Image (tube, rainbow, N blue to C red; front, side):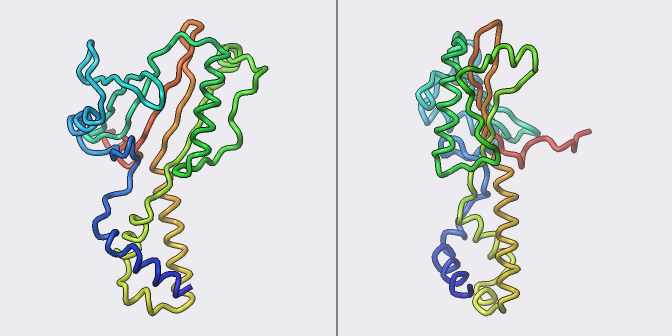
Length: 220
C-alpha cells in the first residue's frame, strides 16, 4: 500500500498545488463566485440574454432549447437552474425525454447515483401519479470528485515525506480519510432533474447545485 500512496502523491503532487476548490461544474464552469461572473462565463459559452430578463439566459444545452437562471445565496452562486423551453410535451414525449436523460447521466462516468433504476415504465400514467399520488419524477446524480482535489486534501494534512514513511496502520488511516473526503465532496456536487406539469403539459427542469454555498440556516 505504501507504494500505491507514494505513486499517487508523485503523479498528482504538482497538479494538487494548483487545484481549485472541488465544486459542482456546469459546462466546465465551477458553480461558484458571483452572479455577474457566472453570467459572463455563460455568455462566453454562447448563451445570450433573454428578451424579457437580462439575468435569464437562452441557448442550447444537451440538444434542448433552454432558459438558464443563476441562483445565489449571500451573493455566492449555489445553483444553475435550467428549464426546457418546450413546455407542450405530452406524456409519451416527456417519458421518452426523462428516460433518455436518465440513461445519459447513468452512462456518464463523471456521475454516480445512489438510487435504483428510476426509468418511467411505458404503462405508467404520469399525470395520474402526479395529481392523485403527488409523485415526483426526479433523478439525482453526483459529480465524482476531482482526483487532484483529493490529493490536495491529503497533502494539507501530511507532508510527502510523512506519506512515504508511514506504518501500515497509518496508511489505512490515510485511505480511510481519503474515502471520507471523497464521500463528503461527492454529496456536495449534486445534479438533478425532474418533470414539471403545467395544465396537462410537461417539461424538464434541471439543477446544478453547489451544496457548499447553499443556505444552511445561518441567517435565521
